[in-house]
Image (cartoon, rainbow, N blue to C red):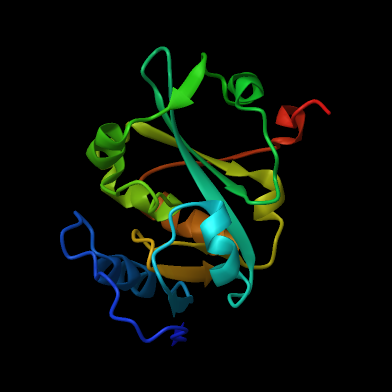
Length: 185
C-alpha cells in the first residue's frame, strides 16, 4: 500500500459513515489488496473530478445507483469514457425500466452520500439488496480509480482486486458489455 497525498487540505474523514474510509482500507489490507491513496478537494460530478483525475493514474470511473420499476437496486460501475443511453441498459442487466435511486435510498442501501458512490460501498449492503454491474471495458484496464466511500479521496487498484473485494462481501460481480447501450448518434 502506497499513500500519495496530492493535497494537504484536511479532508472529511467520513467518521459518520457506516464504514469509514479507514475501516474500508483495513479491509483491503486484510485481503492483501494493494492500492494507492490520493487526497483531494471534494468532487461531486465527473466534470468536477477532471482536474483532480489528471494527477491520478488509472482509468477513472463513475457509478450510477439505479432502481427499476420492480424496486430492484443496481450499482452500475463504468469508466468515464463509456457512453450509455440509460434506456438501453435494462435489456443488458435483466431489469425493468430504470431510474436513479434517491439520496435516501443511496444512504439506506449503500451507506454513502451523493458524490461518493463507489463499488466499495457494496460493503454496506449486508442484506444483498443491490446487484453490482461492472463495465466490461473498464475491467479490461490495468488500473481503475474510485472514491473510497468519500469524495475527498481516490484510490487506484487492479480490476481483479476489485472483484476480489466485491466477492469478499458476499456479492457477485456481474461483468457486462455495455457497448449495446451506446447512445444513437
